[in-house]
Length: 95
Length: 167
Image (cartoon, rainbow over all chains, first blue to last red):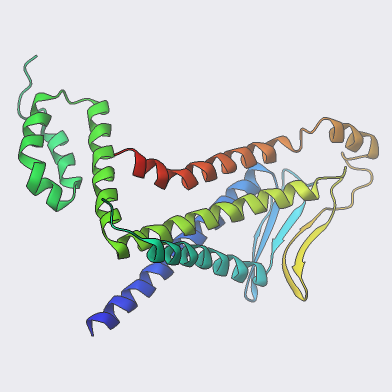
């Protein structure tokens, strides 16, 4: 039971870390869109999140599709998982 | 210089940020030391850095905590790499005057795209576009962001090594 609760806590914490990281990435992309004067569209399932700048009409439109969002989440989680596995296997007690 | 015991109270509060084992071992003598020091920002920063180092030591000692720290580090690196990829995508689409439509796809999966509007008579006429090509004012913000992101990535990548060596 203790192991199970530890495993569930581990999964929940790792999901929370990925969620916070993705929120930070979206915030960074929104900031970059404002700095670079881009019209940004993020596809979220059947919905679209659209950010447009009326003051800058001749600017490109950047679209992030569903596959891009999913790939981003997978890449972030995989980055963390690879780093954690690497550290766990190569860990040595400090002298 | 005489310092009243109340003046060092906020500084003593910072000692609560240290791990419990550390407070049990060094807490008393550190409180005396903090009482003797002036309440300055530099001292507060030193105390905060010391707390971070003490936690880094605790994390290094434990295999699970080390792996958890590495997980967070890996997530940070992944986010920075994606942010760099986003800026590079914008720069790549600006490689030609007036911009080039760019699609990031792998087989049937389309991840992202940059689409430029067609505007023959707008501010980006051919002559102006050629001028801006040689004067890369359009690129400057993107290049600036890229430099900041790469510098941040370097700091994030080297931070664990620096923390290990600066005991």
